[in-house]
Image 1 (tube, one colour):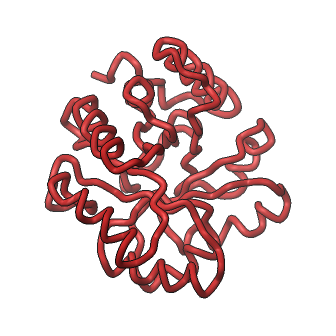
Image 2: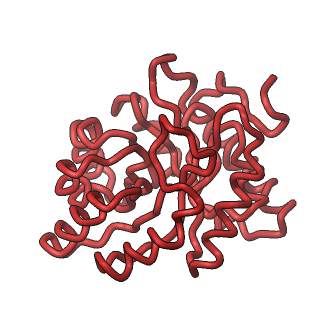
Length: 237
């Protein structure tokens, strides 16, 4: 059974976007937060430009993609046609894609290992472009999932700053699919607070209202806006 706060994934444009915006406003009111403190990332992975354009024209300006190559294929044209868009990489990043990632994305949510830190530091210096960086946590310590284990988070964040000179903006997490999300969000918020990080990328279509209650500054919502994806697509929105 879907959580009570989830939105039907059968919602379609532009009604899906409007419903998500209304749910964010309700969650912020309950949490006594300003809705402007929450950035909605419309996760457009697997959807083509034809599906994305109506969402842009409905007023959405921040989008998320899982794969660098997919983003390279469709976003330069959209960004040219619609100035002022922001693009976030919310999926795994390979070291050999760091150059393209720094050039294309305004934020990268998947900093999770030294090789990525090194590659990003090199490209940021070379390109003189500074995307917002989030360290990805693996709060469930799932072996098949990327991310830094909570017990290693403080040392990893310190290394990002001190060894690689990276400006870390916040933390990102994706709770295990069968777990209640709230404890994972609370843990992420606790680690962020003790490391002086203000941004929290957490919450997807089924649980973003819970994430907002627990301090999310960025919510990653795809299916509630765009409709259901193919079953084979990667989880993350």
